[in-house]
Image (cartoon, rainbow, N blue to C red; front, side):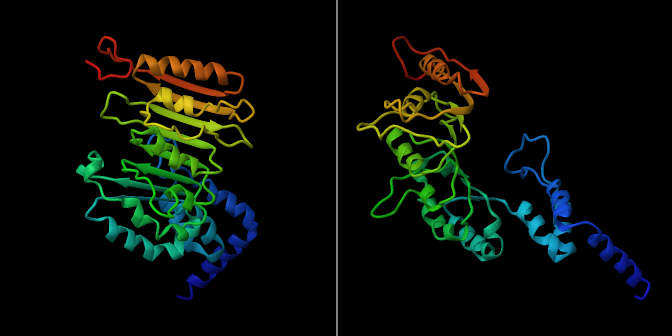
Length: 294
């Protein structure tokens, strides 16, 4: 035991040799996207090293845990939703303040059959106050429902929200409007159309620094959600209220969407700094603008 004391002393003096700010920079170099957040990233966080740092000393714990717990992902089914939310609620008092990105997903048969899916977001409202710093919200394969009574749309419960990701967007643009318009400071918007239908599309938009994304008022009638209708909805008729975009990534499968995308790019050309576009056109039935492909 006594032989370990000098070694411990050398370790302590080594930790004190550099200012805490320098150690924080070193710990930050171990960070990066969580593997579940971005599977294609070239560099992911070093989870094991960050865990070791969080256990080294109190002064390192906060910096290390800030990287370890910034991303929280929960995948549920109708059967497991309530149980999983309850188990997460037990740990959030310890880690909730670190979470900056929150992802909610539905798996199982109900993820593709919205008529079989429960209102899963209703369960997550209870834990939202324990996530006060969430800036990015992802909703994957969730049947988005119109809020009832005095309830606000789910994204509105996160006051710091800046980025919204919705996979399997609702077919009615009016419902999509409810959820996007609830984000008053949104700068980044990612929408993924139904990957099983002919109207599949991907759109990633990032507003210029210091600006937010503006949308037109909700359509007064049912309007199908496809890339062309979304881009029109993101182009306010009032030219004094426009959004300048730095980044645009998009792909689509119909000629109508292709033409709408070309027009949108032309309108934003002077602002865009990054553009990534893919066209996967399908042969449509004669006379069908947005009909099913053959």
